[in-house]
Length: 89
Image 1: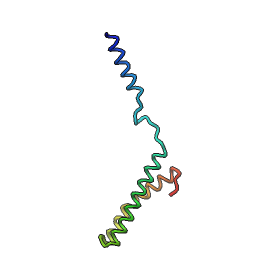
Image 2: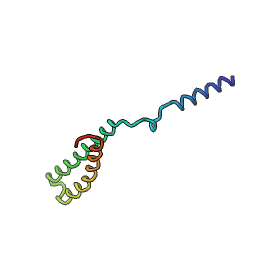
Image 3: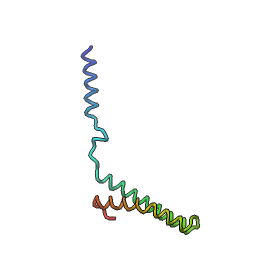
Image 4: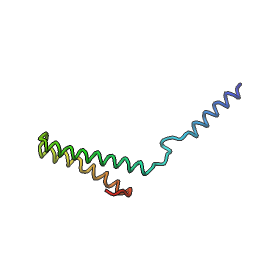
């Protein structure tokens, strides 16, 4: 009976050790590119929305400039990261 318990514990320990963990996975560059492309599209959509808000009179030109100034560096970081991964802007 003791051997059966020991064998069960050993099997569970072996399964735990062999089970792949998220931290052990090799990152897929395609996933990074897809994530960055999604971020870029989101930032570009925000820029379009800011321009639309100005056109509709919901914000002032100063608000538009502030919002674009805040989004610009974020978009630049994403674009640079895409270029570093070999993706064209």
